[in-house]
Image 1: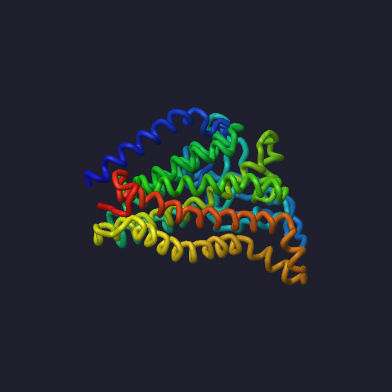
Image 2: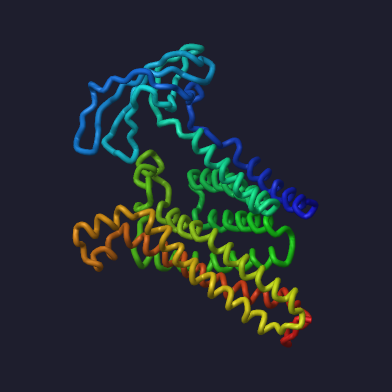
Length: 377
């Protein structure tokens, strides 16, 4: 437990600094008079909505009883504006549990607006199931993994995203965030050790090389960044100064970072284990072992990226096939090109991480004293 305490204290200090830097900016656009409370729908009025195929437009009037907040038990009537986008619109029925935004005037509700179905309870239950299974299986390592999971989410939510919205340089913010995430995640699991140093160095060097490829090929492919989900809505909601292209580049590298850390840790841990069992092994043979492990891991991990990204755009691919679009036309379509770019750059980053980590591990694990010969003793 002592080995775990030191990294935790170190990481908490990092988070504390971030919190001090970012705390005063959080939620600065929220109206303090507006409260979001859980409510149960008792009645709906659908007279002002129009069905147009699968889309619905117009206004639904929702009457609901608040089940939390300072006016718990109060019945409020709110509007539910439908804009004809099925992926965003919600249509309510009596008995639904929803989230209602209520504007208060003193201690009385002034007006209300339907926000979403209330899904938070089931989401927390699913998260609790994940935590339970993780701790039962991985025990102490699972606790460390959970700590890194929560901490990483905090860094993204309270540092990376607010800084992007504030107009910070996406590329430099990505470098800083990736460094923080890599240190937090790997240190949480492996503690302060040579394994941590090697895996961190291998991950960051590989990802930074991939970032260079991202900037180069992104320019050649003429990608604007507007293909990312909600990019257009974000831009026209008042954030006209955002560099959405560089933000898209950031998302590409960030998306591959988790797999890169996994490969770096696999290679480093394997080489460290080999050295512990065979202390007489030569440096070249140790690095060769690392290369062999890296080849096996990257062989499946690159396919994992392909399946993850293509799964996210499965309906788009189905549309192309249903319309009989040619393969050439599909590859040159902006949205497809963006996903091909994301997949290939991420895969290149993974392939780079493995050999770089193996070479660094061979140097550090065998020591610098015998750098000129093939001995690890």
